[in-house]
Length: 126
Image (cartoon, rainbow, N blue to C red; front, side, top):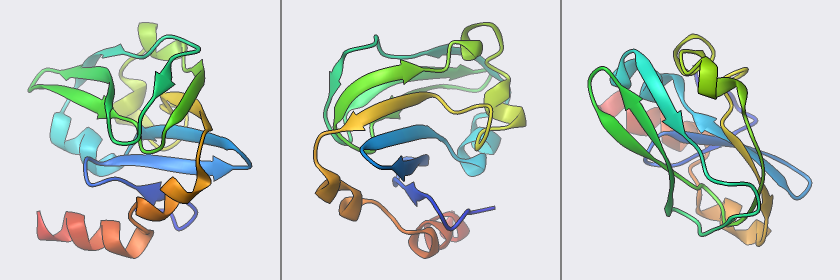
């Protein structure tokens, strides 16, 4: 499932842009590839992040993976529920399993992300 209202990274993060706020999570494809997620480390509030830089860690029974920022800006919110329920990333990665919100520094960065068709093509090749 690749929702049309989102943008994507090649590392399988999704981002929803609403005004100058970007909500970020991992895609269903990423959640399936990782397997059962057991731990999530998210960035501190107020942290300045750079587009495509690592900002957190996702640990599953299979692997440890970095979480990358789809856009640069300031982290203004994280999903505190993931500390006690990292499995939300498996059960609802595109909804309750959102990970963080970034106040976008440069809206032009959104144009560097994959649109739904490009992301679907990327995952169908895998």
